[in-house]
Image (cartoon, rainbow, N blue to C red):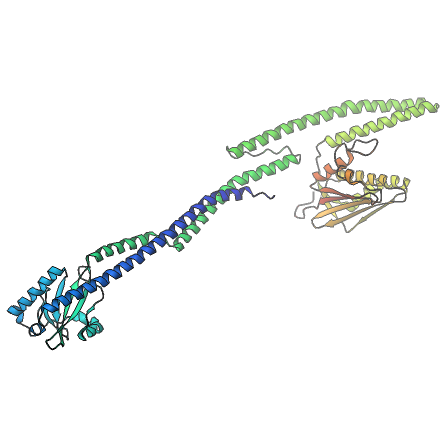
Length: 503
């Protein structure tokens, strides 16, 4: 299962609470909008019904008042009659009706729109009501005998009013004047306050677009800050990973940088302390190896010297000479074992430079040519072009020699060992193929393990040392084999950097 990067986990940890909060906010805002819409609809229905009820009441007041008036007396009034008894009586009657019914104003006017009587202060007979010009269709219906209510309008006092129009009929039944009843509803003032509150609430509610923009901006800010925080955390972690890789690769000389005092800094300090401990042990191991080289090789050299002298002393005694030859072979084998142990344990120090794999393969083939000839094994070296590898020629020569000698020794008489050098992209490769018996699958997975060997006498360090040398170059060695099909060992090595100067 693929694991999420640490930076992604940090980003999720920051975003998930915000997304949850945003979801709750969006849902709450949605239901707030729903409630606000319901309230507005209720307000609209209430205001509509209140307005209609006001119109019906004003018309009813107009009908009741019209029944108290004589149309001929009203239409008989002429400009200048404001001081007459008839006008004062009519105006007083209209004012009393206005007070008792709770309306604002009553006034009567001719079909052409001139005032006949008006409860408003300062009104005179004959004054023209210019506002009636916008009520043309409505007044037409009133003059035709119907009763109508006007649309709601706002007075100078910023209060909404409505006017009910009732026709005044003569004795003969003809419409000779119109009575207007103007009033405001008390409930409408409350509705106006409710409307104001709803508008204020609407301004406080955020639309989905505004919420989306705010959420987008918040996400951008949070993602940016989270990425910065994640980077500040993952960067030292990556440095620790690189440092661990360097230590794992065997380079113990580079200190681990400690850049903070937090947990990552403590981890870096612990890693550096481990590096110092490993370096100290490595140095102790190298000193021990130097002691082995001195304490073991010197006695071996002395024994080889005296064995040679003894060989000369018994050259005329075949039985004793054979025993001395056996001693010399054992000493030679023991020296090889000591050298292999020392070579495997030492930290390789590479002197890397461009190396021609064609030339190096030819040199190694020349070293094993005599052994191949003695076993009647054909040895062929080929190259595709002039492949170059970035390698230490001495270390790489030893690794190739080990594999090539094993291939010759594993190939039966009349067999073939071929060596091919070539390039593959940015890699240089060397392939060694033999026609030997092959390697069983259960053995194939272990051939590079240290101290594993199928030979009666052997340290099991040969191929382990080969792998160590190749990997120290930043390369790898692969093997393909099956019983009866021979074996193929492939060295995969980096090519020289074309931008770097040749040392």
